[in-house]
Length: 64
Ligand SMILES: [Zn+2]
Image (tube, rainbow, N blue to C red; front, side, top):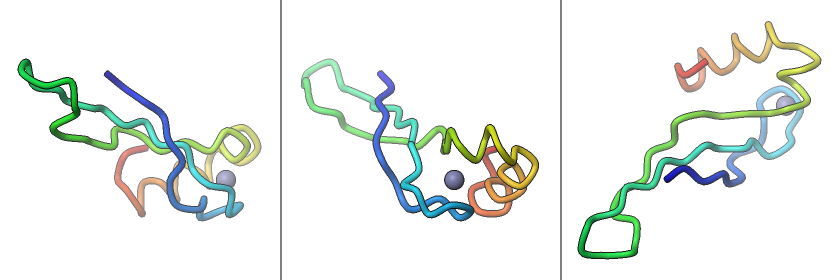
């Protein structure tokens, strides 16, 4: 399943980023066994300065 949590401050506006986190669960346990961050989001920067946002994410995380 995928959850959303707050991450480090946005490089552009310093608001905490929203992280898309994929949680992997084993068949034997209800607890997540592994987590993988699949995306970083900042709704305001993605709306107001999408080009800067894309560039910042590409250089920092390589995921946009
Ligand atoms: Zn931002």
